[in-house]
Image (cartoon, rainbow, N blue to C red; front, side, top):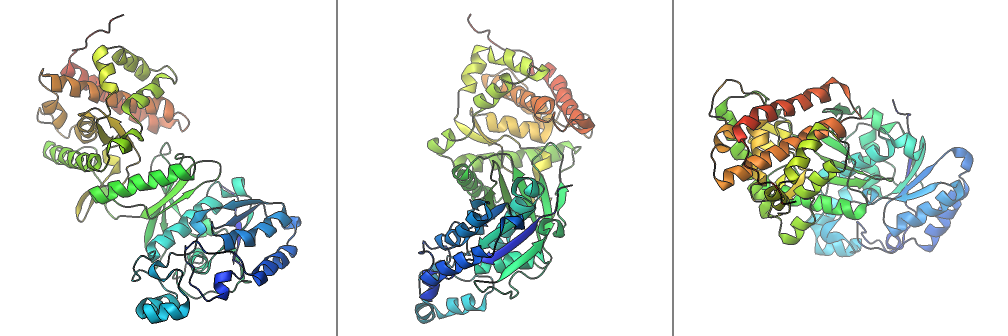
Amino acid sequence: MSAPVELLVRRHAHSQWNAERRIQGQAAAPGLATDGIAESRAWASTLSPADGIRTVWSSSAARSIETAMPAAHRLGAQLRSNPVLDEVRAGRLEGLTHDEAARRHPDCHRIWTARGDLDAIPGAETGDALQARVLAFLAVAAGPTGAAVHGTRQLAVTHAAFLRSLVNTAEGRERTRPVPIRHTDLHRLTDPWARLAPTELGAPWRPAVHRVDTGPHGTYLVKVLAVPDGTADLARHRARHDAVAAATGAPTLLATAPRPGGGAVTVRRHLPGSTVPHRIGHAAEWQLHAFYRRFSERVAAVFDTGARNSLPSLRERVDAVLAGPATEASGALRTLVADRGAAALLADRSTVADFDLHRDNTLRTATGLTQIDHDGLCTGPRQWADACALVGASALYPALSDGHDRPHTRLLAGDTADRRELRLLVEIRLLLGLSFFLTGARACGGQAAGRYADLYRQALAAYRPLAGRHFEPAVA
């Protein structure tokens, strides 16, 4: 159980654009006005290292950083700038004075001055996305590792709309309810992450996923990732997710936030539905295989050669296993890689597949099947996507009834070059999965990881007689 976090939150001091009555949003606005600088210094003088504040957070805006910096210096605390704390994006209103906005875009200006969600303003950030950024920040600052990494008392300097959503979310209220947002108002949030009562989902070896019910605004999923590492990597990760979501209709990421020290937090909407059972009939397996195939085709279509080359390759995944601990999986992979034909295949990056296509990530909703996670994008040879689809739809799981009409049984049979290649890729995929549960999941240990490893062993045992052997020994 992590220690509770007290989060002190305030708005930035008076800025130059505040003085001009200009709408700032996320525009590249100038910093504090002269009186704002004096205000930030006076406020900092009221603080003391004895207050026990270890971390001072700021948005990426100059007006926020300039407010937070004197406080961090006074406290001897770490100053951490995080764009997740930025002001709400105001779309076409940004940079306009209030008089200009009222004259040019009166309907939009009325929405802005009403201090509600900005969904109807062209180019503005939705209320849903702002809410997701709030949850991402709370997960980073006050989540399971927040106290250990950032201290039990923290200070955050942010902006009016974000502050309003943050305070209301932490208090379980409607996110646009009025709260004091003067430049000098300070809010104290006691253990805000725990007050959200997040529910942790999924198996312990997977990245932590928390379901958070915000009451009036529904339910979100907050996922803690070990990777990517750094703001630039996180931006690429977000861009890939957005591209895949647009192409496949999968859920989009609403917010991403770097975690100081490595890793990231992502937030998306929770979709009501149920995962596909592990034991289903042959007809349902064929439907699932067709869905995975369509999903992979749409994913591959959004990546050009340059984008493909920025993704991990099948070769890199295999090399990582071979460089790790010696296991039954790494030994079998080493034998495959020693084959000349397999080595040529591994070097091929002609398509993109979601390496983690399987039923645990497949949700059946009111509108049909959808993939709820695509963090496992990987390049490989032409049939790599089909191999992943076969493993996820059919090869890995026991059948509901015996029969020869299962997708992997039908599609892996035959002695053509394509079938031999597909059999090889399926075996590689199964061995990579087995390796994970023998090594990657070792930290969580327990019987659950062992059961999953046994699934992969059983799939390999059932598959190998079907596959046969058509390897060409490498020339010494």
